Image 1 (cartoon, helix red, strand yellow):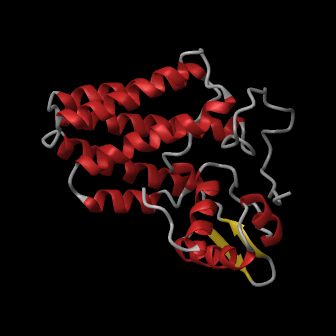
Image 2 (cartoon, rainbow, N blue to C red; image 1 turned 90 degrees about the horizontal axis):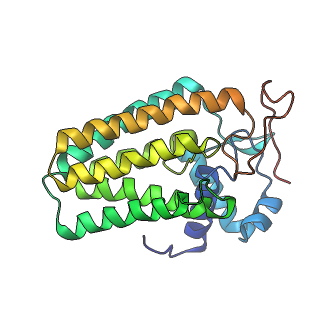
Length: 248
């Protein structure tokens, strides 16, 4: 990943990552002074970054209310997952015929990194960012191996629906995490054998399963399912409608 060349690009990258990772949640009001302090960036490039992200659909702007993280309906999220599933399945089919020893080793290392992070029998809160990056790297690598840059481009645009992003790690149920992490292992193995259709089917099921589990998480934790893990139980009243949050 190339380094940003301007303060605006840096601000946009930091802000986008905060939204996609769940540090900033749908509906959050984005007060520029507090946000600049939170992300360690100045107001001028932050304002430009917010304007750009409003154009891409990650944030919204109203003249009398300012900027906020965009909220999406579940149907919109489900639609993004469906397109992601098909595009990344296509990436697997194409990648199978382009695998090299180096590519196989790289995917195997990423799977091994995930194994190491899950070895304690839970995803420790301090390891969430590392596990998330491993997941992003795996999906990105498969798309790049496909040799079709349009797949990567279109999937990246789908990440503007934050809940559909590959940065979302649903960490509350460790058994689900283990089951989900086994998919990249099987995908990497199928690709190493040149079995494109098999890898494609596993990838499609992997993303479809993530949507199904997301639906459950939205029902159980409508206000905080994207937050950094704290391994707590649902609080009373958490099943109600979500309230907009203002950046403290």
